[in-house]
Amino acid sequence: MKPHYWSRLERWSARWVRWHTALVLFFLVAPILIIMPLSFNSSSYFSYPMTGLSLRWYEAALGDAQWQRALLNSLGIGFASTLLATLLGTLAAMGLSRPDFPWRGLIMPLLISPMIIPIVVVAAGFYYIFAPLGLVNSYLGVILAHTVLGTPFVVITVCAALQSFDHNMTRAARGLGAKPWVCFRRVTLPLITPGVATGAVFAFATSFDEVIVVLFIGGTEQRTVPRQMWNGIRDQIDPSILAVATLLILFVLALYGCVNWLSKRSQVAVTND
Image (cartoon, rainbow, N blue to C red):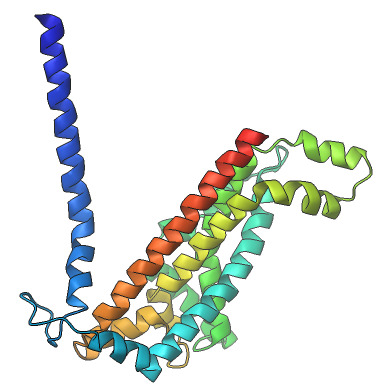
């Protein structure tokens, strides 16, 4: 009787876990499931039931000059800040991974503090620092601010990649006469590339999705897609926002696919090593 009782209890526990997981996933995905169908609504109201199917809001968003300018700004600022964040984050992770690096326990929390501190506080700090320097309402100011926000993601992913890195390979390369830069370019970088690329993807997603810092530092010329969506919601209820939101969801899913592919590639590289 006891084995049969415990077997039935395990089955009920497994069913409860599956139902509970399904409810949590539905709670998380429900906003997406609601927004995406509404983007094809022919009506100009954010409400169900839908009056018909239409692509008018996609045409309105993709054909509008302000949305096009916002997309170009988001891509340009995102790529520039990602490049800087990847460079700085990789160098910082290389230094932090050294066993003889001093004050690691103090410096690491400082590097990832932009991820922990509320973004409003960070944005206000950027404003008071950049205003005397003339970086407010400038592309350079937004790029530097997004670089600070994206660098912690690169530091974390590269540090994780370096934990499984065999430092004997670099010692062997130096013993054979390779200079530090050649050793990094030919030995270290190829092995940690998946971690660097994963951090770069997260840094780009952080920049592309950020709105609070742009509201504080950016001007009308630096209006990005999230800020354009903010203005559309604040000034008027524009259904083209739903079309843009659907496109952003597809874009995020593509980024998630890239991160998943890079993660699998990193695991394969570690296994091969």
